[in-house]
Structures are given as C-alpha cells and as structure tokens.
Image (cartoon, rainbow, N blue to C red):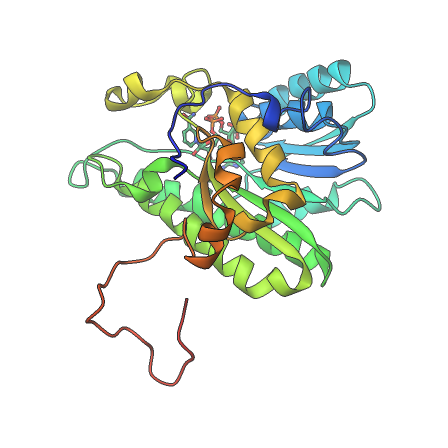
Length: 297
Ligand SMILES: NC(=O)c1ccc[n+]([C@@H]2O[C@H](COP(=O)([O-])OP(=O)(O)OC[C@H]3O[C@@H](n4cnc5c(N)ncnc54)[C@H](OP(=O)(O)O)[C@@H]3O)[C@@H](O)[C@H]2O)c1
C-alpha cells in the first residue's frame, strides 16, 4: 500500500525542468496572475526553464513585474515575458490583461496564483478586509478564468488554481482565507465539469508552506513552524500538473509536498473512488440527492 506523506520540501527530479520534465513546456505560452513575486515568480522561472516561449505576468506592482521579466528573460533567453499591472478583482482590469496578451497567443496554461490572506477572529475582523480575501481569491480567480474560457472559445486549455492546505482545515482566525480557498477548490470542480468535454483541464493545488514569499513572511505565528518549503517546489508541481500525464488529477486538490511519482501509483483509486475533491461525508443512511436531477458525484 502506497502511503503519501508531506515530506517533500524542495523541487526534485520527477517534477523538475532540469530533471525528468526537461522541455515539458516547450513552445508553450502561459498567463500567471501574481506572477511578479513569490510563488508566481518561481512558476514563471520554472516554466521558462522548461521551454515556455511566452509568459504574461500580472500583479498590481509594475516594479516587481519588471524585475521578474528581466530575471526570467536573462535566465532563459528563449522566453519573452509580457507584464500587465492589473488588479484581478475588477472586470476592467481583467479585460486589460487579456487585451495585453501577445497577438495570436492564447495561453496554453493559466495559473490563478494571485492571493491574499487576512488573520483575525470573526468578532474582531474588519468587514472590508475579511471580504477582500473573497474578492481577490474567489472573484479574481473567477474573473480571470471566465475571460480565459471565453478566449479559448471551445478549444482545450489548462487552468491551475493556487489553493492552500488550509482550504480543508478549520483553524482559528482563518475564516475568510480558508473559506475563500475552499470556494476556489469547488470552483475548480465546476470548471472541470462544465468544460472538461472541450479539453479544458482545471486543477487546484497547495503550493506548500513557503517562508520566503510575501505571504510566508506575513504568516500568522501559528504557522511559523510549518513553513518548510521552497517556491521552486510549488513551481515544479505546477509544471507537473500542466502535463497531460497529470490528467487523472483534473478537478482535484493536490498538495505540493506530496511525492508526485508516488501519487501516480494511486491513479486508479483516485479516479475510481473520486478522491481529492470536497465532499461532506453524509454516511450511508442519509439521502442528499436533489429531486429531479441525476445523482451528483
Ligand atoms: N506562502 C505560503 O506559504 C502559501 C501557502 C499556501 C498558499 N499560498 C498561496 O500562494 C499564492 C501566492 O502567494 P505567495 O506566497 O507567493 O505570496 P505573495 O508573495 O504575497 O504573492 C501574492 C501575489 O498576488 C498578487 N496579488 C495580490 N493581490 C492582488 C490583486 N488584487 N490583483 C492582482 N494581483 C494581486 C501580488 O502582487 P501585487 O502585490 O503586486 O499585486 C503577488 O504577486 C496565493 O494564492 C496564496 O494563497 C501560499
């Protein structure tokens, strides 16, 4: 019996563009929200190393986008990086992101990575700050995905949503962040259901606990001991998830600190038993079918 532990903390050959996934993104184009910093920056770097030729990165801070563009293009001379300063929470800004895509380049892969987290108890919370987690994490992911699906116009594509392990946990002071990322997981399942038949793959993943990114540096004290991972682990995992080999994970939530080679050995049971999706365990005796609709999975 294969046991999947959370014991990978850095990129490893099975998911690395310098290892087994050399050339895995050859000639591909990519759109990364929050691509100027942290996890999004590492994703841009690793996809460029894997042969991506066009990467569009967005975020609100132009300076960070420019610095990442320079770094990625210097590191991988075959790639061209486009930057768009935009806030993913407004329809106008998201339209501007798609208007700025290089002519003729429909991204092969969209990475919905932009995200924030608040940290306070419900009674102490400021309502606008509490709701802002939902605006960036859920509305932003929805708006960018909606625009991407429209651009695909019936063609295949890949969407990778950056979620968190906390999306399935109940922890103090995390009510806005955890519920917003839980919604991202469910949204991932909805996209897969509605667009899977046209060849769209949509997956969610926990990028690891990463102390060096903006979110890691601002992490509440309760998490400090659990931030053990590099942004490259997240980026290599995103690269693996973008490959057709990972199609058994479509619509599901994956943790970057699992070993993907070991996870593949569980492929049949993940698909057959419909694992790694968000469901309430109702037990065998309680019916929850919606009258008049076919049984839901
Ligand atoms: N670090 C961890 O341990 C950890 C753990 C679990 C999940 N995650 C997830 O990983 C993702 C990346 O976070 P990170 O760790 O790399 O932290 P980060 O360094 O703070 O990166 C967050 C990114 O999101 C962008 N962003 C924030 N608000 C935005 C908005 N309204 N519109 C457009 N872009 C926006 C930021 O760019 P601007 O500031 O320039 O807008 C930045 O590029 C998030 O979704 C987070 O939930 C991180």
